[in-house]
Image (cartoon, rainbow over all chains, first blue to last red):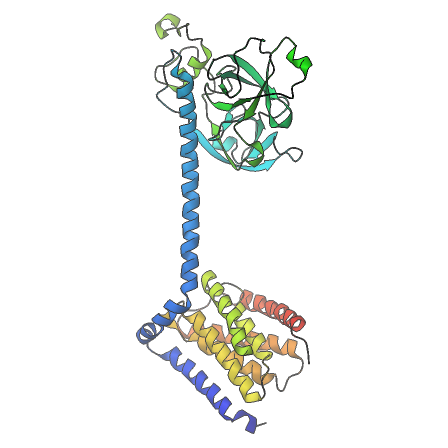
Length: 288
Length: 148
C-alpha cells in the first residue's frame, strides 16, 4: 500500500498540487500577467455569449420602440389619408398609444377575445380602442388592475362604424365566417367595390376616424338569395391577423367629449369626428 | 482518452459556472469528485494523476474569472480529485464516501476563502445543495456507466 503511493505518477501528481499551492500564494500581479492570455482564450465563449445576449436584448428594445413608432405613424397616416379629401382640419397632435403584450386568448377561437398586460393602474379604461400597426383590433371591454380584456372585431357582439376610404360610404361591421367582416345594411347602390380600403368612420365615440380596418373582398360564394335582398352584401378582410397578435397598442382617448371644444386640444379632434363637415362646431362664446 | 473526453463537459460546466458567478451549488467541484471517483486506469498512480490533472484543469478554468486571486479553486479541486481517486482504493461504499469528500472539499474551499481575506457568506446552503447534487449526479453517473 505504501509503495503504491510513491510511484512516478504519484510524484507527478504531488508536483501538480505543489504547483497549485505555489499559484495560490504567488503575487497577484504576477498571476494576472501570466493568466491573462489563458483567460482570453479559455473564456472566449463566455464573452461571445455575453455579447450575443446583450445584442439580443438591445434588439428587443429596438424592436419594441420601432413597433410603437410604426403604430403611431400608421394611425397618423390613416387619419391624414381619411381626412385628405374632407374639409376637416387635420389634427396637429397624435393620440397617445400605450403598448401592451397579449398575455391570453379565448381558448375556443383564439380570435374573439384577448387579454393584454395593461390595466386600470396603467390608465386604460373600458371602451378604449385597441390597434396595431396594421389596423383596428377591437376595444377594451373589461379592465382589472393589471390586465384588460379586449373584444376583437371578430367577436359576435362587436360592431364598428366604418366607411370606404374611396367613396366615404358609411356602414357598420359585424363578424362573418372565415375571419371576415360583414358590412351590414348597405343599400343596393352603395359604392363599395372589391379592393376598397375600409377605415373607421369616427361615429359612435369608439374609434377615431380613419383607422384602417380591412379591404373589401370579392364574395363569389355569396348565396343568390342574399344578392337579391334589400341590402348589398359586402365582405371585408381585416388587415389584422387576430390569431397571431403578440403586442397591441391601446389608444388613450379623452374620457368624454366636452360640449365646448377647446382649440388645439385632443378633445377638439375627438369632437370633429362626431360633427358633420358642413356643421361648424359652436364657438365658446356662444355657449356661454 | 477518457480523461480528454471528460475535459469537454467539464470545460462547458466551468464556462456556465463562471457565467452565473459563485452560485449554488458548486457543480464543478461535484463533477470533479464524481469523475475522479470513476477514473479507470491501469494503475492506481495513473488514476490519481489523471484525477489531479482533471481537478487542476477545472480549478484553472474557474480561477480565470479573477486571475488576480487565482489558485484557490486550482488547489482545492486538484486535491479533491486526488483524494477521491485515492479513497476509491480503500472505500467500497462509494456513495457516502463521495458525499464526505465533496463536503470536505467544500469546507476546505470556504476555509481557504477565509484565509484569502474574502470571508465567505453562510456556507450552509452551499454544503447542502452540493451534497444533494452530488448524490443525484452520482446516481445518474451510475446509470450511464455500466458497472464491471
